[in-house]
Length: 428
Image (cartoon, rainbow, N blue to C red; front, side, top):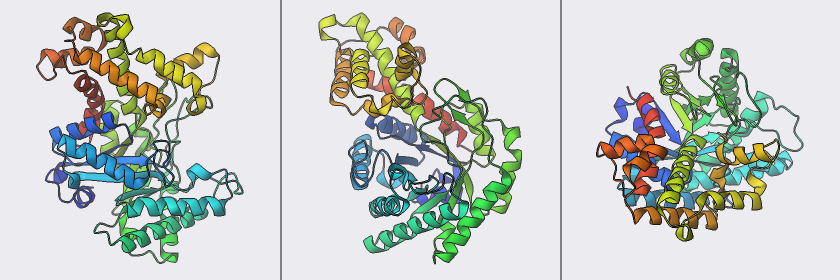
């Protein structure tokens, strides 16, 4: 893993001190800034990944194409003072996922264009996710079909890199046991880890597909296999990692030289579980909703503080604005949040899947968030109010690590609390 990190991070001096690498799967500028500031403090490289839903050749739900996302991230890095060469940009769940309603031939043509756009934009870590069936596919795809489609997409990426004359060729992540992006929609009681046999078979079938496609030169850059370590979260609870249940699975790495496991849906795991995952070979830890959930917690807590300090006529009313917009534009949550009106109301705000994250780019919500920070920047938040609503940040202010008159930094520190757990788990 150290060799992988060193290669991807252009020889960052901290690479040899890393046992693993966490991946920030978010397009929120405040989250990315928080991640960069944490990586600066830790003196480590930073892996940032956009998903196929967020960023694609048409713009995704963020309105950004892959080249736009690169420019966007670089702009934040330049402002923060984070060296571009220590940023690793990845694409997550790249494949026909967004076009599953189309016949496979058409969906894969669009996936080809998606991969070409990511590779030509300079993304150096690509998760090839072809595990989902398309409109005319059987309900469950065989490993052979998944692998052949993944090899096809790998060939597209390799051709794009050659065409653009890029200096760094991408590394690839494969795997057929891919957790649902953003967490499970149904209630969970237990999640079975991938079997050792299934992990090895997945790698073998993909190796054969690479060979059949003339991609032997690219196979050494297949660095990770997505497997299910037995972790997941639904709307209201988390399935924690239990090392004893993954003992047989982790032994598969003995037969996969040069590869590590990549663990998705590690959001909300305990610090102890994250450390155990890295120790057991899950050297790439993905976190997405967990960081935006923390941001929402911080902003709503600051809105509660605002209600105590700012005259009603000047308040941002952020909570009410978010609720109004989500009701007016239910497309991102109504298929996922079930139950009666009261249950849906609670889930809209507090679900672990954090579908609020799809709404931060809304103009009305963005304006309310900015007004909230402007209002609180004009006053000094009393320590006793911080203690009530953001107790951990209260102690950071008391210790001199945070300024009480900088609500933006206070919100970011709540996000960095989450990231610090991942950073600690990934250190040797």
